[in-house]
Image 1 (tube, rainbow, N blue to C red):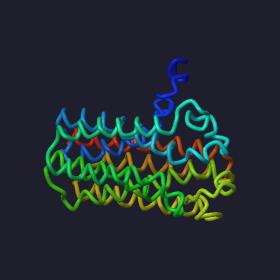
Image 2: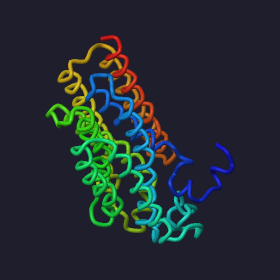
Image 3: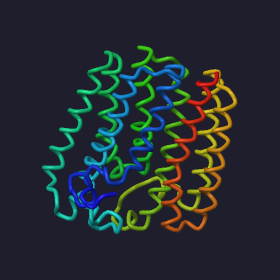
Length: 287
């Protein structure tokens, strides 16, 4: 990472210096494109959705920091972000958010009417998510729905329809997002309790790792079901077995609930998503 990237306030506001969120959104988007196209997505859709991931993740980070502008300064991990540090004003951040959403709209306009219609629902969920933590202990559910919204959009773009099978993938992405974002929320749990921010990490309490484990079992079950619905082969199911091993390792390293360990467990989900995609793509390639 270059110093110019680390020092640019706008890039940091969009979290482009920390691509983990982009990866975590990209992998399930690619799963959906590969399932929807039977392993042969249109190049135009691959470009549009990849760029859309980058833009929407950036927009999500900006609106999240805008929503948290009065509390981020009280949290150790976020106190140096551009808005609480006074590097970017709230109004400028809001303008950047709408600019990014305009770019996302421009991208989706290159697809079909069904995808465009779905995009407005996805934009609404993405904009609403950061404010959920004020009212409910389930903001991770809102994030999961926002994260999974690329699934019906990918199917709409590739097939101009919404087959029932896609919802198995959608559900898997929702549960996976809740699980990994709960690990992320565990890092800030003590700070969030002091300032009144709600999260699944607080809601689950001492049962946090148990519930994460159950969510991960649901993820694997839904992805196995998706594999059966889409008639996938050995390479795909082997990838799911490797993903299961990563889930187990996450539990092992985070059992002491140390902040760094929980953050490491969160980060390893990048590899989970990547391995599942590699297995899926390889399975379509050899079938």
